[in-house]
Length: 534
Image 1 (cartoon, helix red, strand yellow):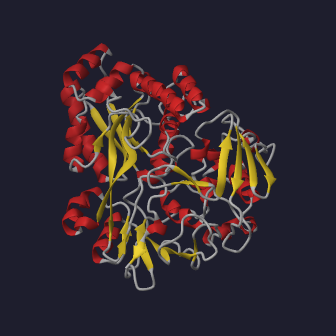
Image 2 (tube, helix red, strand yellow):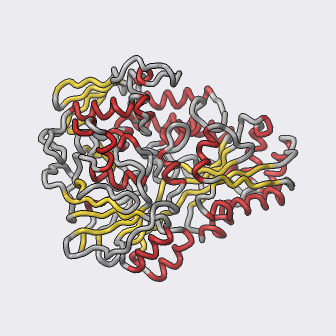
Image 3 (cartoon, one colour):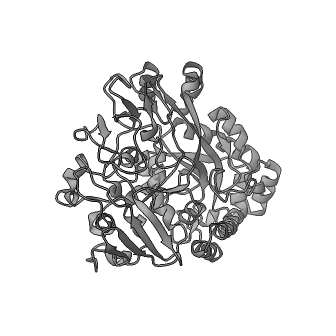
């Protein structure tokens, strides 16, 4: 969501989801769906409309319909071909991609293999500063475009691992075998760009030209709305069942919810948690619950010697009553985590977290004493993005005082705009609240970015974990890959550099003017082209 990106350079899901219910711009009022066959959806303001230059779920709401990737995800998270006719590899390292013929951009320029190569090279070239840069890091030649010394001139401006074979064929060579590459291709950063984009990339951001089922209806009205209409030349699999959508921006999720109740917008993907009981009473069946892949966790600064003992980390985890907090703060709507993977991800094993995620104050105190206890001030970090974060952190503090005897606990409430940069710089001095929403539905994307020795925030290192992830990435089949990822998960659970808490439950809503509203738990969110207007 974000996404959605998470740790280190990969910040989409977290950056996006971190503020999921809180941001945007005050929207002008207006009617929802009307007789012209269009509808209105409310969401926070995007930051960019060029797919390779955003890690915001709010931008993806728009770009997913303006652009069509080689492959996408269906509502169940399965990979389906879109602009590609096939994506194949015999060794997980060299991939051959065949495009579906006859595709065009909204300006009638043909969509070719070069359209993808140009977009990827532009996003991967470090000096361009695109937010999606890191998504290309596994492609051969990436290091030449992104020298470690930021002041050094890159050795190249094109990825050596991307070869245009002919107008409809791409060959992509990775640095190492990666069984999840086809899933990675679903990420918005891998969308193509027309030649017109590179003439004036900043102007293009205001009125992008894509190859998707919808095209811009005018320019982006910043801090107000983005209007899309159906592209008549679209030949792909996502045929729109409506005539267009207006994405209206809101500064407050509460304001968007008020407009949903009043019928001024037709779709809201995330009703604020505090408003859900009211929405269920008032909107009834027009509330749309959904499972999500986003979970909250408590991370530990393992680089700080005070938190280096795994027994201390386990003690803190087992002193937290997850079920009690879920009921008190989220009305029991969330799912208590029992794994490092949410249930909707292949590879989730019920109960994998075991006693680490089980509330057991007596065992927690034994482990705490075994670790030598904790002296000094225990600082707990969270952002100001949601009131619920402080609510449940207060409960956690009380439980740590009562169950472990830690009396000196202080809160560090950080502005959301500074929170991720603080964590990236490892400036936290105690356990911190964070959440994760993967970029694509793979066990690998939940485990590698969060725990790999060169990527995680906690300062945790484990050659055993890293080796298992590498073997999973190179595995010849999904089943073999998942088995290896599960072994890596067991290492992370054993050491507990971070501990999972609960899985978010999503609640969207719709007006009575639209039907067939599908909101997926993946980066695509609302399946815009399926919405029908009465």
